[in-house]
Structures are given as structure tokens and as C-alpha cells.
Length: 174
Length: 153
Figure 1 (tube, helix red, strand yellow):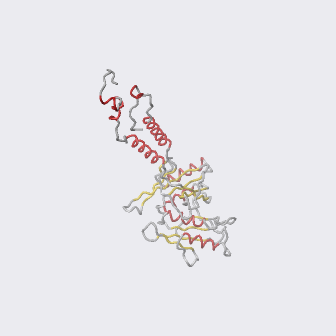
Figure 2 (cartoon, rainbow over the protein chains, first blue to last red):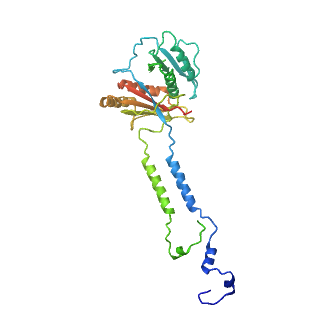
Figure 3 (cartoon, chains in turn red, orange):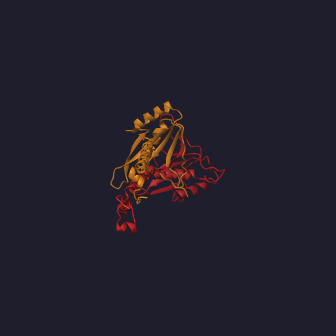
């Protein structure tokens, strides 16, 4: 029924309210992507900002000899283990290791740890034996730290046993 | 939901709350505070630390520490060679005498101070040797070498 009260042929059979008809025509089939993109960008920025790319770092503690004034070579009580670290070639990755009085030079820092573990079982060597790192001027700092770490690792994994207590860096020349 | 035809009530004047702008604002506020609260300490400048095999480095909180940064400044195209740039705490050090004087001053003020040497892995040993000599001359008892932690297996 129209508000005026007149009958229309269509209205009698399949009556549909005019408001409903209008609504059907207006209903759009396209998905509005704008809010989705907004949220996605927001999430993206959030995670990019929230992530830290910095690597975790730790410390290798060491004590320095107490010296007054000028640094002097302290007299060594027992024969120390001298480890020499050389730079080979111009590349940053090349180094050469050598242990004084030891025929076969270790080829890697892992091997150095193994050899030094053997040293602890030999007569005349104990964990008080000083270990001195003689590094060449041109050697990369990474190798020096690697060498220091390798010496510290001696017997590290064995419970109740300890490695060398006295590791030092030589200041003078080779 | 997006396809819903306008209902009768919405034609009369909507009582629905539109959440989209609110969520937008909330996200923006979160990002704002996350960004503002993350400040990078002046003494932890970006340095490529040494990464020894099977690193024994430990994350240690030192009670009283001063960081000596040794930055690598490349001076060639391939970046293989370079010079050093020292920074003690937040102050930039110009030469070794300056470093020595500042370290001695620190040692006087704080007898139990520990020095953390954060040096770039690409640096030549001579530069860090000079710095270590200054630390030893200043009669500072403890020195710590910063290195990357061991990778988790």
C-alpha cells in the first residue's frame, strides 16, 4: 500500500518497501581497504621500531698489574709460556700462532686451547705459570681477543679444575 | 560488516561508535612512547666487537665502570686499514696524553673504578696496546674487554 492508498500492480504480488529497495541499490560490493592498510602500516612501523638489531655483548674481565709511573717489565719467577701472534699478508683475516719452545705451531685458536691443556699436565707447568701474549702491532684486535679467550678456555668446561690464572699482554716488541 | 546496508536506526542518526580513528590514535601513541623511551646511551656507541670462538664473555653488571671506546675509522677504499678514534665515557679523546690525564683523574676520584675496553675488532693491536698502557700507567686495577657473547647452540 502506498501512503496515498492507491494500488499498483507490482505491489500486490512481490511487495518490497521502497526504503529497502533503495538500500539494496546502494549496497556496494567493493571492500574498503583503507583501514586495513592503515592498521598494517601501523603494525609494520611498530615492529620495525620495537626490534633491536644490536648484538648482545659481554665482558672478559682481567686485572692489570699495579705499576707506579712508568710501565716496567716485572721479573718473571718461572719460565712462562709465550704465545706469539703474527699478522700474515694484508688481509684482515690472516694470523699466525706460535708457542715458544714448541715445535708445531697451532693452526687455530681451538688447537691452541688443546695444546695448552696438555701443558697443564706436564711437569714444571701449573695453573700459576704465566701465559704471555706477544702480539704484533699489525694484528687485528679480533685475533688478540680470540687468543685471550682461547687461553681462558683451558679447562673451563671441566668442573673443579681451573686453567691459567696469569695471562698477560706483552707491551714491548717481539 | 562492511557490506551491511544502512539500517533504520543509522538513517535516523547513528548511535554506533566508529572505532577506527581511536585504534589509529592508540597505535600512534604506542609507537610514540616506544620510540621516546628507547634512548641509546652515549657511551655505547656502535662498534663491531670481537667475536672469539666459543666466547667466554659474560654479561656482567659492574658497580663502578667507565667505558673506553676505540672506534675504527677506515682510511682506504676496501676498509681493511684504518685508524683509531678514542672516546672515554662520553668525551672524545684527542691524543694519548689527554687519555692518560683523564684516566689518572678518574682513578683519583674513584679508586675502585673498572675500565671497559670496547674496541672494534678490525683495529690493529698497536692502538689498543697504547690505550691499555695508559690504563696501566694510571694505576687502574681492573680492565674488562668487551666481546660478543657465544652464539646459542
